[in-house]
Length: 591
Image (cartoon, rainbow, N blue to C red; front, top):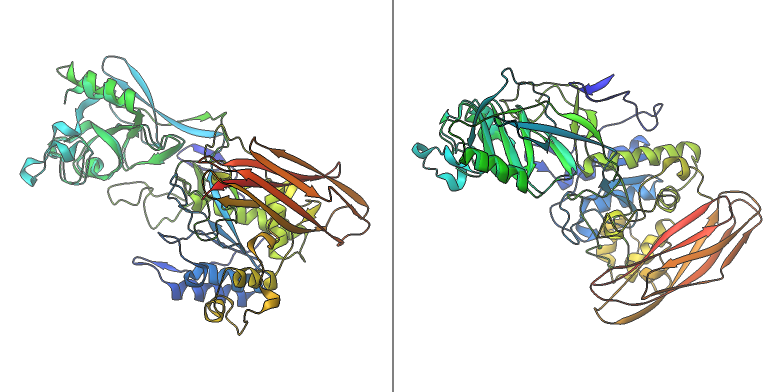
């Protein structure tokens, strides 16, 4: 059974267990070069792969003709291969998505119904629940509890403004060794582990929807609970590198303000660390020593305990699994739309599991990647759109296995139009967070209708975007040119979603033209059903599509009218034949 020290246990299997995997290395210690990325695409195409999964992206949006991933994906599409991209981990900032070409599948990250909780117990018997992936079991019942801000490495030139965040080298190792360190915010706990800490408690109210692993016993509390631990200790704040006095930290549990990687606490010799803040409370981190990440309020309680106790102590327990009834929702770090280059193409396309995922891990490194971390494993628990993208890639391969002749756009359409709608209440960015919704591979293999297109359609789209022949050929890799006959608007690209942007306060209207291909029952009739928020109008003509054969195509027009403001207006169009519900999101917003 695959697991990480008993956490996340289960049978590990791929999305399509009989599939073969080809791996192409494109990244090195210095990064991922354009030449390596494009060479890998060329090799994969030459090898005849069916799906390309690439969990890589730039730091900033790039136009299609300068983006090696977009160019490589275009060449793959020309050869019948769908490319599945990670959307990026720069959320929740607006327009932070970095992989958004219309011929690729852009995948956001959402939570699963499992989360990892790590309890912190103080010497006064008060307990607080944090989040982390803590596999460590502390030997003693309790350890001295210190606040990172109280044990700065003054000899190294640090004060409590740095050590409170548990930054590397900021502790005094003598004070940290064999303690549990309370840190402000969230960090990787490596400094605490290196300093000899027994564990670490972190606190903040960010990244609360997934769990982290740390190189020593650790828990991530809410910020309030973290402040309580701080007050309990009365005790520099952020536990930044070199900011802690090792003599004061060694063997203690250190409280740090904010969230960090806990490496400085580890280096300083702490027994553990407690971090606290209100950011990234939707995922769990791993740390190189026992650690927990508390919320802001709980962190305050730890502060109070430190302040009011002459010899504060604490312990950090091994993480436990709990059910997350609010799942799935898009995690905070997942990059958001709207599309930064083509405002009227919805991105991301959909979302897939990307939080607290048990995944194969290289034994050439440790759980956290820090040398102070003693754990070497075959499976690790990690989060990111680099985890959600492979889920979608596996789903695409699954659909391809049932429909081997389908084009990349048909497979993408099947995944998008069968995705489970998600709640705006849990995802305030709505479609710009989750696209069409959460993947449902079982439905995707038999979608009923698909929005199909190919190279010529994408060329017409690029020409309609004003591409010069030179820039067009940078994407296509051939001598294709723009002419009057292959110059189309973005609204006529046969995309399985409808997006319209305009100036804030304006009334906007646009007609979209689409064509669907019957891949379900030979004889079938689909009726259109629309749902729209107030201020959004969706009209479909014709509202009924009748098919008499598989492969038959029918066209229709959708008129979207909206009065846009600062909020996103959401709706949907569903083609329903009583068996299949082919759903497309409709979005209007102020660009």
